[in-house]
Image (tube, rainbow, N blue to C red; front, top):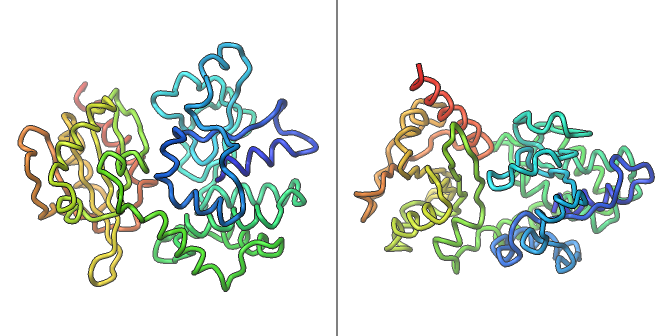
Length: 340
């Protein structure tokens, strides 16, 4: 969503930030878009047809880069995936709300990175300042929907909402965006679409919401999974085999699954499953971190030859946004210590 709106904004500016024409490029294969139910729901809510938007498997990026006809602006992330690192010199801009990883400093013409609840907040505030007429009621609804989703409907317990997020929503409301009275219904509708994983296999669950990284030469992935480890084990009797298959297909050293769910007492909970040949290098580090981990009681069958440990996460405020840099830090420090 953020990439689609921001490309439109950059293309429409009377005084462009960068030269050339802009197009969104969704960084997943089109066939995987069905796994992002909340994104499809947000576009539908705003009356926007996604069919005309190109996906990563529909563009020959390597050829375009070789012909010097393609450059990039990163939206909602500030570091390329491992498989795309060779495109680093062609990054000309960044707009993101995650921790700044200080990449592409020499090639970027602008870097807008700020800790807010949603990247769509940063896009909204920039558009309001530079070209407010570009925000139609449809775009206002789309941006507002994502801000609500990213901040848990402004839930203070999640500690993601900032004053900028609130300002963005209020200003969007004036343009025809979401009314405050509709926040809860819109949020619940999108959340239900995100959480509807009833027909997904374990392989699809791992594809649905996964981020990749490399630290100290080790490739890892962190998958967000919207059900408890207990339910996952019951649902897939071949879970370990499916995890190991994904691990091997992606050539990983470590696979991490972060589960989120609401328990029978309606309490929001998180769990961590960390597996793979290099997983032991991470176990002690995460246990001694502020994630407040304790060993899980979940029993896994068939895991004897596949290193695996599962934890209940006491600090539920720590999402992947916090865990990702923690993993980088632990693995990098472990390698440094081993060389001393």
